Image (cartoon, rainbow, N blue to C red; front, side, top):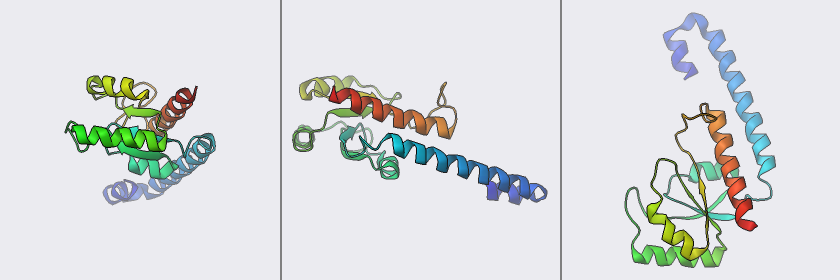
Length: 153
């Protein structure tokens, strides 16, 4: 983004570079802080509603073992649900994460039958407390921490 701004407005290149450096420093600090907060839960296995959180999981060392939906917008087949139940048993999964934009109606029976705790991860933000990239990252890490800690109790 900074590069594009500089191409459009080269007279303010120094300003854009300072903003970029400030942002990078803030993000590095946030990631270091959050890595310290997740140390006791980052190996805990969990399931996401769909297969879109692996970059986030890789950045923080989270252990996503499966997704409820086999692919975008596709309901799970009985075979897929059976495979998920096997993973829940073999990995000791205690939590499943949905998203605020998705209906969790199809999850209720599966969650209840498997004794799972449900958490909410937000890929979009744009709500109070999730207006900036930093707030959204913190919200999602906190949601994982709180849900996984709750599932253990």
